[in-house]
Length: 220
Length: 285
Image (cartoon, rainbow over all chains, first blue to last red; front, side):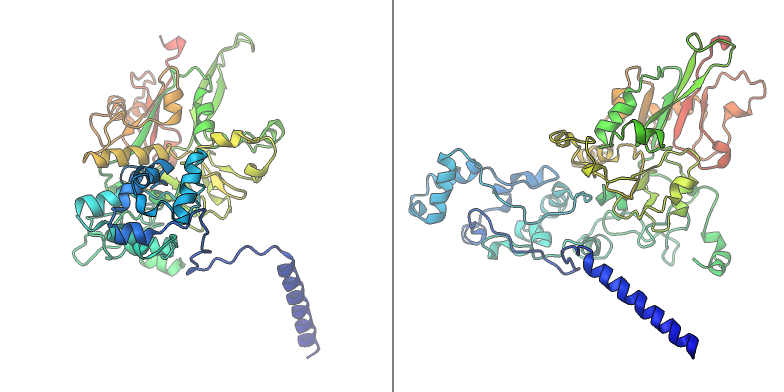
């Protein structure tokens, strides 16, 4: 009994010490699996809804790099002005006025990144656009929407998908919208090559993922 | 992995050579290094520092064995009785050998290092917990551990120098193991470009930083599956085979073989992807 008491006192002491340590330590910003990050304020409240939905402008008219490089890029101010200098009807609107202020001051608009992946992730826009838009002829807003959500209903873009690794893998490994032949074997990613044979179906054929499924494809 | 599981399903586990089960197709990245051409100039090492965001640790940490040179030049003195200034040296560029049956892969507790279907031994930095088990098990000692948080350490990348960091490569933080990746960021770009043109990567589409910098072209890098590649031809000419643990050169009893190709520590059966071409010694000519 005595020993039991002594043990519990010790444990409580340890617990107290651990919890004070935990409080002292700088706790990082809470990022949970379903965290979509903070809403981001942009220098100009850009109405995606006006451009993409009302005017039916193709996403890739402005985000032109998406189809030919890893990063989608942010359209230069010139692109905005290219159209807006001929659109007299909205020239007196406050947002467009701000736009021209930047243009007259010869300054780029300091847009902020909304869909920001960690530095150790390699995501290639080109590959995804090539596959779904150019090869499978799906509508552009659906293709972009796989990751960016329903941007045409937004003004300032807001993250609406998780963009977590599990979320990416849910397409790459499972059946989702991908219909590619053969990536790397499904499941057991880590030991499949060096230690354990990859899982096979009844006929002995290795079960492969629907998209690239190898760590080093996305992690750099 | 319990012992009983291991024993019951033994046939599924460790097998002689992974290529037997899943042949490499369409890529198997490999290298060959001509030691006769190597002049030990260290350009490859410098190029690697620039390409892969390697921190320059300084004299003191270097002396503690904390250098981060993924590509290092090993130096061997000729033992022919001459004294230092006249004595000749042999050089051997040493980096991750991208073993097919890599000893590091099997021991990683979190699977941060694993084999890609292209035959590269990948290192996933954000997965690594820094147990350093891989480094302990690596016969080549080519894995380097971040003992310090170099991005925040003074004079590693002083202000504005950080602008030259390669955006395609992670800047590793403290407590992470790292090693040569065969410039996987360049391979990825080459594969992407090739895919756009609906083909596979041709020989010469991709070169590693060390290969690019080598003034004597001692290093060649390419796809071992592609029969048109320089690397394939070199391996073929030297009769070096990926899945053998002894090569034709070793079997020659005379010791005066015309063949020069060998791989390091083959007897340990890691099946390295780097073939070295033995130096042609003065005495042998």
